[in-house]
Image (tube, rainbow, N blue to C red; front, side, top):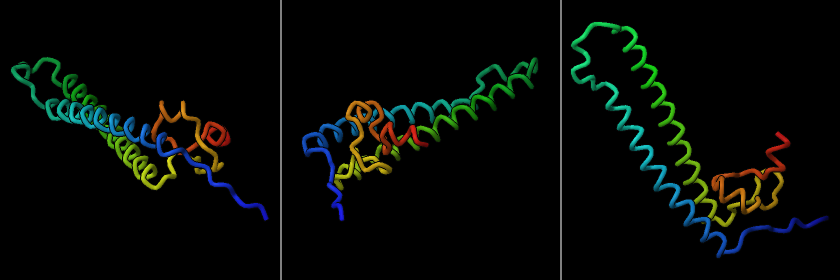
Length: 126
């Protein structure tokens, strides 16, 4: 019977990724706040609502803007959640291990997509 060798990143690598991810979380939370504030300010018409001209066009534009900002906020929240999950994997020392192949995910890929759970090989198999 073959024994599966355990592959994992060194503690130094994990510490480097932890710092990278924490920085990304900080930026992502700041971006989320900007998106949310833009969403909240979409309903502020100022003095433009005194003119009835092209009101239906303006309403449609506002709805599209709110939907767009809402979708951005949802994606940003998912990104933050994925980054937090990556921090848990770092703590468990399972970070960077492909959940399909069991091999280490390329470091360069993790620097670009630090919340990745699949290697390029596994991604291509999908």
